Length: 389
Image (cartoon, rainbow, N blue to C red; front, side):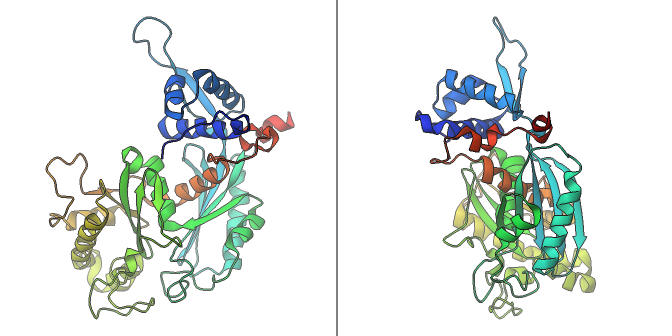
């Protein structure tokens, strides 16, 4: 979506966030280009830039001279300007990471736990957060984001079966997460978090539209357009893992038979792989993955399908090779600038980086109607080290 500033006096915090978000998405970028993109004057943008530099959110460097006059200053996010915790809870364990404002993982802690209950999960996240914060003891901590497997709030499908988190029904997750860590918290579906990570840091950065196909303990996906994951009325759009691909196939805990994730998922591989081997499993599921790709293309017409998740890089590459050549679909064109299927370049860190990005957005994303009080604006808060001085 286009980010546009406001000329209202009460919109000062909003304009700061607009400028910061523009630098985050498009940096390195010059003041004049920021002004053009957000619809503010260069003078207004320059004032905001000075404030953001003073509070260590951005850094600037002169570009190489290309002619007469002084070159423009290229502005980028200061990676050390802020930090967030990204957490991921799955039926096979808990992973937690400290992530900087540029999306780099500073440190991570993982615990293998079979179907962690809420008490155990929140305790592990709290302990890991405390340990990880020692890596940047004076850093500005902006929040915590947690990614979880869906679907959510579907009586017959949520919190049942080997690919979901049993025992989490009716748990006030966001409130407990914040209480456990002492940080502003946000919770999201794992697929949406991973797709956001691809949009900000991966193959989706230069794309307007793409579909993110997620291979995790279960299988899911989401369509991303203009930086936004389209999640449906209750956040469950894209549950391709529970589309029945094989009539009268294996029973699925969701109540249907032949669902995609019963065959194509990490949980499916752990059941079938020991019998047929990794290469045999890849050969078995390749036709289903091929069919899923064509269905996604015909339904959403994305620029590309980005294929990522928790599986190993080697397995993802095997699956991508196994589906070639892809059958015809609306996506088959000679003039394609990107391939129909693109492997994620982020890999397993996508979920943690995406969860942390949700925490950053929860605090820093521009929203009309936010407080005009500078004391309440997180962009005007000093890091711990400066407060102590």
